[in-house]
Length: 195
Image (cartoon, rainbow, N blue to C red; front, side, top):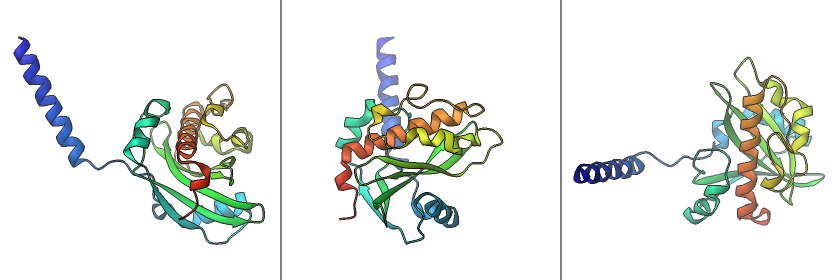
C-alpha cells in the first residue's frame, strides 16, 4: 500500500512539473492589450493630461516572487514582468500600472495610479462587464485608496470599506491594489522609472 502511494505521489510530482514547463507563467496585463481609447480617457480624467505614456517593464525575479508569496491576498501568481507607464504632469511624475481582477463571473480592467513616492493617486476602473458591482468605480469608493503607500494600509472592510451592491468586486479590487502595492514596495518606488 505504501509503495502505491509513493508511486502515485511521484507521478503527481512529474505531472505538475510537466504542466509548469508547458503552461507559461502568468504575465500582467500588457498595456497594448487594453483598449487605448479607455486608457487615454482615464489618463485625461485622472491626471488631466493627454501627453503620451512611456511604457516599460520591470522583470519580477523568482527571489522577489518567493519573498512576497505569503504576503499577497490574491491566489494567483505574480507576473513575470510588471508593466509601468510613466507620464509627467504639473504635479510631478506619475506611474500607471494596468491590471485585471475578477468580478462575480468576469474580469474587469483597472489602472492603479501612483505618485513618485509610491502613494496612490487613484484607482480607475476602465472596463466593467457585469450588471452588478460597477459601484467600485464610484468616487466614494475609490477615494479610500488615496495617498496610501503600503499594502498593510489596504485592508478590506477595515481601511477600505465595502460599497453596497459590489462586495465581490470591492474585495477583488482591494486585494489587487494590495498586491500591486506589495510588489511596488518590494521593488522600491525609486526603481519604477524607466532605466
